[in-house]
Length: 104
Image (tube, rainbow, N blue to C red; front, side, top):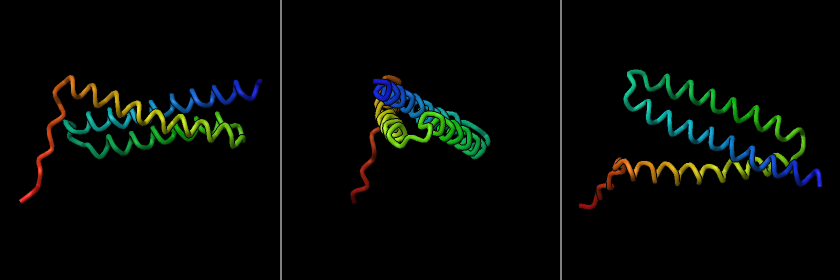
């Protein structure tokens, strides 16, 4: 019973780490577009996001590969959640432009 609880916590934690990582990536891209030094945004954001995720994976797994696997599964699932949320946000804002075909 205790193992199942730890696996559920690992799944939820993985989702939270994924939301932080991919939400932070989306935020970085939005901010760097209008920034004078976009490379600084990307560099610092990448280091912070990767650091948070690696520390989170380390403490969540506690040396148990099943917890790490479930946590990574939640992390990847959060990618699709953030992708869906940002697309719907941008569609509401009218930001998404239709792609131009390159046919000749």
